[in-house]
Length: 253
Figure 1 (cartoon, rainbow, N blue to C red):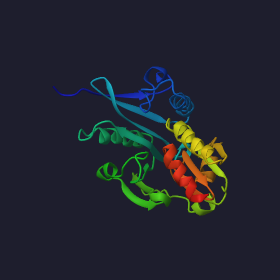
Figure 2: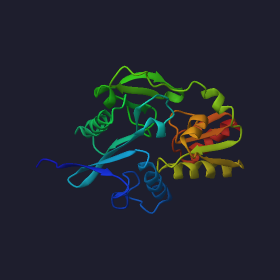
Figure 3: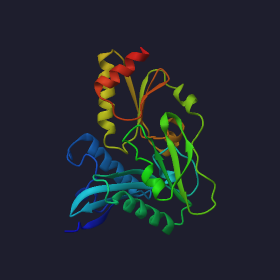
Figure 4: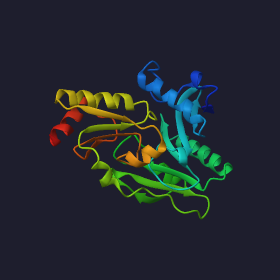
């Protein structure tokens, strides 16, 4: 029997019933609640969140936003930026179907193109291969393995990363966690670093980034939504176990 595929656009009218894809098994967790609250505020800015259902069950999703409200540290004019792409099974073309939805939306809204930031060293960003397969071109690189890909619709100027990453890190000598609530796993990622730091007698400061201006100015990486910095060194831009966080902090003590 063929699988039945359905796309569901999540917005302010159905968020309470649909919820987000990630951490959906723990709807009472702080991270899940924070993500839903964050989504509710972002819908007004043009963010789109589309879930793919396979036989009525969630099998993937894509999240994207206009660049002027994006949670990624990339500069450009009139682009759509993909935040997240995730599918629970490979080989069915679901990722490409979700990307096609985003591209269609961007074209209808007369955008210059679609941007995605990838990184081969973590599952916290999508992999680039599926985007290359769908017509994207890799045009830039950032620190810590980040890659900038774009699918342009016209001859608009290319998007680009800032180039002041070293200066950003130099601002933070004390252990500092910079975050937004764009990812529901940010909460546990923060908890693990704080717990590791506590075991070592290190005080952690948490900066909850409030808007894109702060994001563009403070974020230590292109990923934008989470970064832990200690003694002017990036500890991580994704979730670590308490043990792993302790090992990285010890190296700088």
